[in-house]
Length: 259
DNA sequence: CCTAATGTTTGTGC
DNA sequence: AGCACAAACATTAG
Image (cartoon, rainbow, N blue to C red; front, side, top):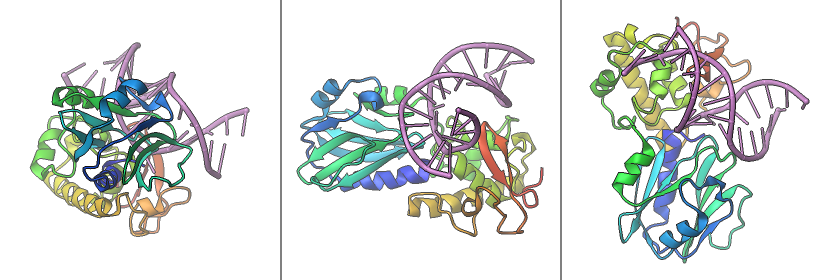
């Protein structure tokens, strides 16, 4: 699940922890830790307070206070974050827990495709996050156009490329392209001004609704609500096409998103 | 048993 | 350099 809109939901979860002091860090599965072991993580995090939580693309960044260290959460395809009562039962895929006097922050992840890091400072954070483009929620139309300029790859592939713009994944890209009426496999080089306008409008709308929901909502009036076997376009009641673009399963409507 | 799954990284080759 | 493609990571659901 976790794309920009989902991580925005996890950001709200993280903020529920407030500025509480972290007592014990429990690592149930060190397989999610990147660049640090469970002992070292506990040593450096226990006793700190949660600080400011932010998001860039699909990354959730939780500062620790005092100091300049921060936790870097990535959720891969199956990760999530939960704020739970201290005595509430855990989940089998809870991998790391941050205990406080007022509750537990639980990092859950079934597949463990990405994971959790601890950065000492902003320099380490930037190295860990890599070359991310501007966040897809705050980028402007012209900024996005600028990021796409001079490229000729498939549009969906470019939108999902985190170095072009950060935060869009498979579902969001499909939904935005469907709402913009642009074929996912069309070339960036063929985008006209009108296409960019529709792309930007669709991006804003999908992210606005998705951020509020903390997910890409499966509305029946959206592509996402009709994805999957025998899905039909809610605009035309024609069968959705299914294929592979940018290496990911892609759904589109052959009528409103012609090649 | 086999396939696919909403992500990132790394390597290969054009 | 830009880009497409495949594999790897680990696990579950259908």
